[in-house]
Amino acid sequence: MVLDSLEGTSHAFGPNCLAFQDEFAAWNGNRYAVTTNSGTAALHMGLVACECGCGDEVIVPAYSWSSSATCVMQHNAIPVFVDIDFDTMNIDVGRIEAAITPKTKAIIVVHLNGLPVDMDRVMAIADKHGLRVIEDACQAHGARYKGKKVGTLGHCAAFSFNQNKCLCSGEGGMFVADDEAIYERARTLWSFGEEVGPTERRDYHVYAMGWMYRNNDLTAAWGRAQLRKLDRHLLTLRENVECLSRHLQGVPHLILPTEPAGFEHSWYNYTVRFDMEALGHAHDARRFRDRLIEALQAEGLGTGIWQSFILPAMTVFQAKNAYGHGCPWTCSRSGPVDYSVDSFPVAARHLDTHTGLTYPLRAPNGTDVAELAATAIRKVMENIDQVEACEPVGEAAV
Ligand SMILES: Cc1ncc(COP(=O)(O)O)c(C=O)c1O
Image (tube, rainbow, N blue to C red):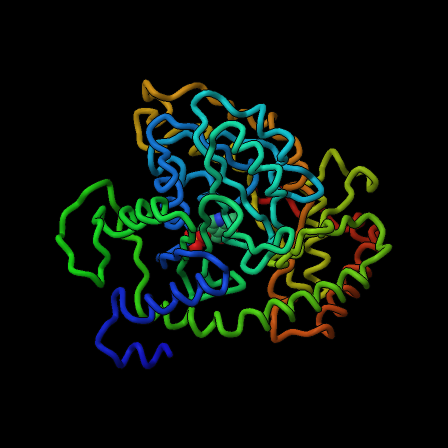
């Protein structure tokens, strides 16, 4: 399909882009889909579609990919962080209301690792306070909450098709929504601020602030080909995860990921945590985590940390250096926000104790590979005293 596109004459936003949008919308159960050049672009479109602007506050989890939060500043709005729940690794829904102020406009929920957020509770809070909800579904293609696919639960959603994602086209993304006005606003930002789409009769007039977030035909062709295989790949992933979890039952000092009843994980990342309290390493958790990971890697296991920082600890928030001159935080419309790292102890504990698996569990690998992964993990965890006996490896990269 990519070669067909290459041999064709339409390499910018072309027929494969249109078809990809329609096919993805049908697959996910959305009325509208707009294909983008990244998940980050789709997140920024969500912000604008939900009418977040200068000085508006947007609630985001304290642990995620950077652009789950920096997309908020793209339109001069202010991210307000909420700590995560240790068990699910997602935003702690019970802490959201305490973070709401008169300036709050929206909540970004991230279905981290592929586990949906408890959306009934989030939507109840949003309805009560008149807020919009943007789903960051960049890691969660095909995940379901109470039978419904992520991306259909909030007011709009962003998916990523970056190389590591379960649906991959090198780079790329999709914005989805069901409300026409939300879709129209997102589409305007997506294509230079124009209201007329690139395949329609354009007036080349800019009606609002715009970027160039469109996908191209070759990448969309690749995405379409991958979408056809996605259900099969997700099934293989689930079978491999079930096999791994079965074999890891009872392994000492290992906290396995959860999949609560009514939540269907898509297993983008199988993240385990080491029980550092029980291991007596709560004081040097990060360093001991790195030594455990080295030991696992020495067994041939493809595993590693996903993030090195919780979001509020990143320089852009600590230095508030987004647009220079302290903007958007110094804007007269903005209120004070708390980015002190100590305010997010659960995210910090998760960060310091985790490691994850992605590729070992993906198709075409099968349960034989999942069993090998389990054997490696069991061997390391049952011989922890030998890990402790290793020479210090120096401070972990932070
Ligand atoms: C949770 C989350 N949000 C947003 C993104 C951004 O997606 P992209 O890299 O396609 O811009 C990613 C990508 O890793 C992600 O994992």
